[in-house]
Image (cartoon, rainbow over all chains, first blue to last red; front, top):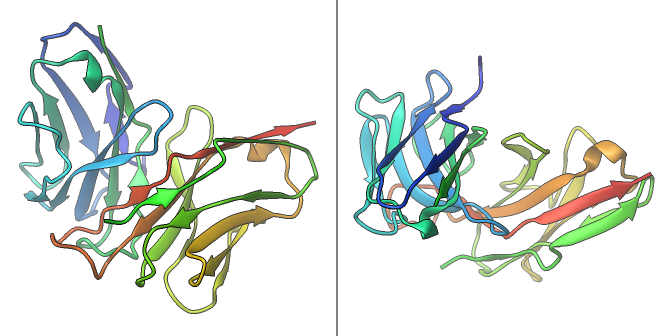
Length: 116
Length: 118
C-alpha cells in the first residue's frame, strides 16, 4: 500500500493500562507527525519527527505520553497509565521533506482509543 | 499563537445547490492555508492549499477557496454540490515564519460537517 497505515484501528482499554499505537508512514517520507482529535474538535498537534529525531514534542500533554521512531520509519506513540480523558482519535501523518510547511501531510486512517 | 475558526459546525444543503464553508484564522502575518476533507471511515485528505501567488485556489473536484488577507479568511466554496461531497471539512493553517521549533505543524479548526441531501 502506498498510504500511511496505523494500527490498531480501534483500541479499547481499561483505565490505568498502557497502550501503544503504531504508525507506518509512506516509504521515503522524512517527516512524521502525531495528532490527537477529540470528539467534535479538529486534530491537535502532539509531536514531530525528522527521520528518527524527535524535534518537537511541545504538544504532548504530559509525561505519560511518549513517542519514538527508532529507525526513521515506523513510529510508536505510547500512553502510560491511560485515563478516560485520553479517549480520542490519534492520527499520524507523514510528509516527504524535512519540516516544510508547504509540503502536503498525508494522514493515516487513525486509531480510535477508548479508555473505560 | 495561531488559531483557526470554523463557525459552522454543520451545513446541510440540497444536491446541486451552492455551498460556502467559512474559515477565519487569527494572524495577519504570512501563513499557509489548507483545506482537508474527511470522508466517512477514511483519513484526512488534502483538498487544496494556498501558499502564495493567486489568491484563488482550486481543487480537482470543483471546490475553490479564496485567500483574503485583510479579512484573514479562507472560505471554501463549490457552485454545485453532489451527494458524494458529504464529508467533514477541516481548515488548517501553518505558520512557517513563526515557528520556534523546526516544525511546520498544522493548526486545525474544529471542522464543518457538510451534509448533502438528494
